[in-house]
Length: 322
Image 1 (cartoon, rainbow, N blue to C red):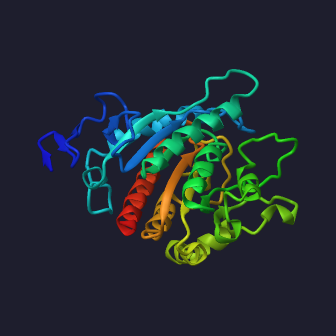
Image 2: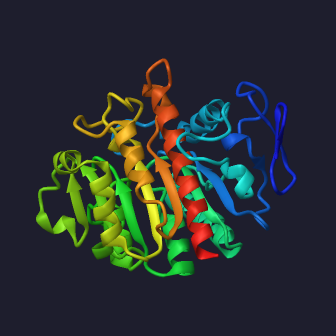
């Protein structure tokens, strides 16, 4: 239900509309609370980039995407969706979940903090969207999701496979896909990596992932690619992890490791729309680094919009599970 200047959600929360430059920056102007009881969808931030191998700055991504989301919702219904997800679901912004250890141990501290936050969310039977941060971010939420739902299928948008074997447990933003498959958190044979356009060197690094390299994926087209992914995933619980450098840098220059030859923001959105109905339990959007962005903040806008699409996909999945 809406009234002039205000959106009133089913939970009775009032959200000021059309005032993107006013108020505290929360994702889509949702309520900020760490009380997840009764929430359907929870948005959390991970302002962390200490495990990035290339340019730093992704720690600023969550705040930038929150700010841009407040402008995007000047029209409450995100095109082409036909409803306001905040009216159908109780959506809250949890704020940021980060470790407090400085110096040695920062990455482990962050992963533990993200895990505790995600477990809290899943124990409340809510869906989770994490705004990153570098691509170490999935460690905690994926582990918590697998404890709740079993081994996950991941749908991984990226220019890099992020499947480098660990050396002496040195976690970085290029290791999660290998590490979590080794742990049994991820079922790599029922997972897909999309728009990859870097070569790992050792073929064993591919593991059992279904890899769609950029040229192949672009030639296939978004709808056909989405159908291939649906066939791979089936009815498995799904975690979508979206590295913004999966987009071509002409659409997303503000990231630490840009690689030319990727999809446009629209092509990526069309793939996401084609995943509607899958059992999506959680998602993240990582590696937005606003310090390298164009003056119009196009990377943060793209990241916020794609994150909103994933929030809608989780809302649709909740309808199917009920």
